[in-house]
Image (cartoon, rainbow, N blue to C red; front, top):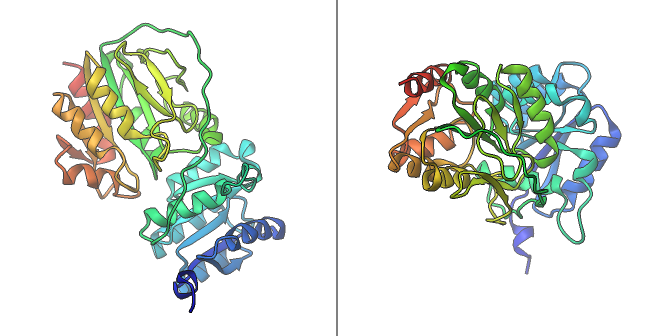
Length: 349
């Protein structure tokens, strides 16, 4: 009698990279899971676009340094023309952080640093394979996933001047570009603190902060344990542990819930805002796959704070905002280019 795995149709994964070394490393990882198979390997961006049209896989692993075309253009064409999900692969993430977030804004779902992602700790699945399985599950494939590794945070005693106005923003797929659009339209004269929860692997947190700093006028920095939300500053989690507010209105990191797929969790932060923030707040849920943030946004609304969800047309992926709209968690559903102005209107009163 054949096993369930043998009877189940394998999930097709494709690779686009001019590097034989990179392609071979990815192949080894994919083949280690009996539910996955390599459908094809493209050496050029043009060939990847052509193959996605002809033999669309369930996931394309795209080398960000694909040589013949800019990976941003390749991502745009594949995302728009074939709707094939894309996971970016890099082996030099420190040298390409700005490009990474530009390409993610063009439609790539996530990014993995190959050098660290292929080395599993103890007997656990490598983070590359975890990422692949997580994306496949979130895009509708019937597959089990394991939660990513967690990082411990160092405690700091940094304290900043408290504010009574908080802008809480959650985002995932397509988030960097949407966040830059929203934050760039919020003037500093409203004197609010901004805390952003963007789904992202820990090793890319620093690059994301640097990238966002280049695209908005507000200073952007990593939140430290014990911080107050800071006036006219954007705070971002430093790693994949969840960032939450506690009753003292300071920010803290927690690994729990350990098995929560989306990290850092928008829901955990939004729920903590609803429970503990004593001033005025606005909750915003931007583009992203899945449902993270929807119930948290509803809690913020029930607290009496204003809530906004990005509309379908301007989303890279209408998952998280859609889930929020479905449970009536949003007071307003707005185009991304209108959200910053709405926040300004609300907090200028």
